[in-house]
Image (cartoon, rainbow, N blue to C red; front, side):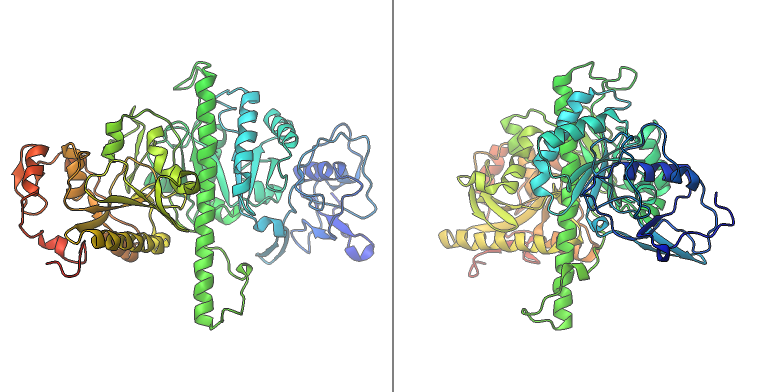
Length: 604
């Protein structure tokens, strides 16, 4: 269209000019302007021109004509935001139907010169954004009314935690029933439309085709975490290429219902370079389709519970990334101020520093299960392979699992310590201290990390190094207090390689092991084999390698009972306890090195 015609210019009196290159862009532009209110204002400028020398604009004549029939609708974040626009003389066609939706953020303005592209995007596209599809309502045929209720309720719950970040529910078309239902229900609850809105578009082309930049997207995955199956899962794996499949395999080989796993997208991926997507969060929802595996057969009591857990896991994964990135920015700002000589009275805005993508592996699970008191006491996980009935997931760098309801206790205390003041000994900014509910020695306390996404040692990376050091220092402070009470005690600080209680926690335990709660071989071996990782070793490994080694071999927990001092073997726990009460042999040499044992300074 307009072949060999000179293109319009802003100097000719237009306040805004939008260039459309295909029918889809024409329809999108028509939908945008038909949905404008009289009070809406649009920034002036020239948008969508891909080349200063371009003479051809496909479909522009359709854009200049009146649209026949209802036009596509637009989404609305704020009244001053838009996808595209045209001249100042444009008027809204009152005959066009309009549906209330959030307006899309401004589309990127691109200028090309001999292959060099310089994209200028709206400020709102700098906001951390999670785009997610409706889970389980497509191929899994989950009831739309029930699903929309769960989406809105879960979003409402997470609104106060988002900060300046936002959530976007995405579906392919404006006619999507789930989008319509969610919009209406979100409006009734007065949910902030700048933090949560719906968007019609392809989740793998939100930026290039819709102008909406999302640094994190969710994938409605299958339990095998494999490509295929159609829908969103197939589209995301195909667009991301083999890089995503490899990165996913490195972090998890399967998913259980209601769980999610965060996978950093390699910078070599097309989605990373083209769309600006840094992470993909795989999430698995319930299935109501009898033609697909694990159908719940219309058991919506269970299905609604799992779907709510799936969205909770998804949003928790996103929040974990936000917290890691925020911490990274703060650390780099402090380092910048230190090296640049800025005093405390000089300020440097966070906006001056570009967020660095952290290669974080955040595995979140909300699956509930029942557990006995003995299971709670054990505080260890038994590694398995595959996706067994136990709900345990295995990866090649760590084991992740679905945490039972009883195993969530430490997590809830860490997230909301103010609600558990009777149980905690100390509440600090980034750690919480409390007594172990089933102590395995005279003195046995836990130092809990308060950071989200740190379920266990497998989730620890270099960015958490300072947190590990603060946890260790806090543990030492309490050891000093205990030694003032009893100078004969000896302490060891460390982590279980694969704990059964969710939330990273440091054990501070006296080496007398005089406790009625120490009942079996697993209890003993979890503290006296390589399954127990000394805190000083963990800190050194993370400092050198960016992660900690874990010894989660189940055989470690079933080893014969041996005294932790003289290494003599004993047939059962009573005989072992009787022996260690009288054993005076010095501790093994490796424990006496690198401050793995802590005792009163005048002790031998």
